[in-house]
Image (cartoon, rainbow, N blue to C red):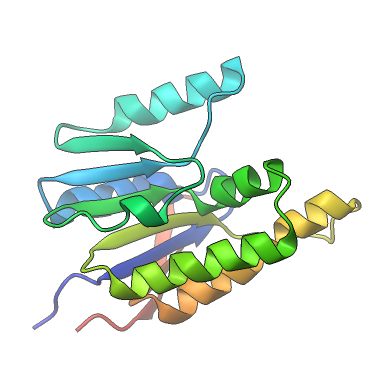
Length: 176
């Protein structure tokens, strides 16, 4: 007998269908769901993007805006938690002038919390390891910190799904 994975990581390139897949998965798992939204509406384009994501969600969703503090909101008994997305979370940390040590500590705290939650938790992130080496220091820090975080979560996740062209491909499945 198979059960839903406790921790699922959904990764892929920009506009690959990650969020759509993660939302559909969450909706298939439980009628009560929590969206931990990390995006901040800092300009009109991002406000429009956030509004489109909100309009796509069906009934049964509760949203918690959490651009930095994910750990406090991960354990939601009786609800599926969807974190969208870790890429923006790392960006938000970088924008607070966090050092690499600060970001690594926040990442370790997130992974430790994920190991303790009852789940299910679905996390979305962009795959940043398939491009060229960025030309500036900030972009390299972003790529490195996001890549390290993605590796840590993938290592402990029950399921990892890679999306490309709207097609989800399970690349790890340890759910029993």
